[in-house]
Structure formats: C-alpha cells, structure tokens
Length: 80
Image 1 (cartoon, helix red, strand yellow):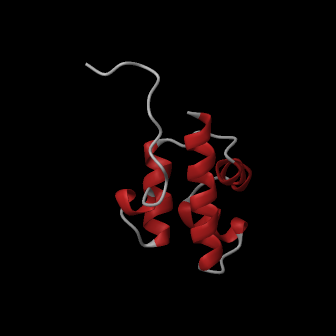
Image 2 (tube, one colour):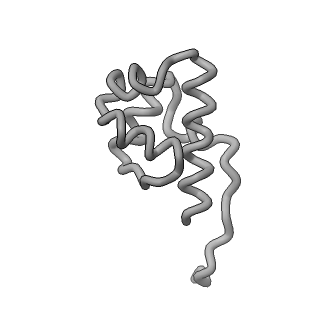
Image 3 (tube, rainbow, N blue to C red):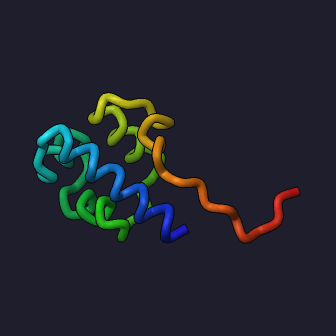
C-alpha cells in the first residue's frame, strides 16, 4: 500500500508541475491544506476519495485518468 501512495503522490506532483502551478497555489485551488497537500505529493499521506476528486478536478482530469500510469500492485491477500 505504501508504494501505491508514493506512486500516486509522484503522479500528482508530475501533473501539477506540468501545469507550472506552485504547490501552494494548487493546494489552495483544490481546497486542501498546503502542508497536507505536500505530504500527499511526498507519499506521506493517504488522501481521501474527496481529496483525490478535488485534485483530479483541479488538474482537469477524471479520477480514473489521474490514476493512469500508476502501476497496479498485486495484493498479498488471496482473492475469492
């Protein structure tokens, strides 16, 4: 799970930087506390679905598009 959170943060950071928006301005636009948003990009925070939706909207993407390029990790639990 930690790897997924880090991969998500790296993807969000890459997309934000491609739009040439500062972390502070982006967090404000998304309605997310700047320090918490920084933790999301560093992979140190597991964002809620509401925050993921806000990030996607600010990037002009759907939630599924936001996750494009993030490799799926195989779960250690057996699926039924």
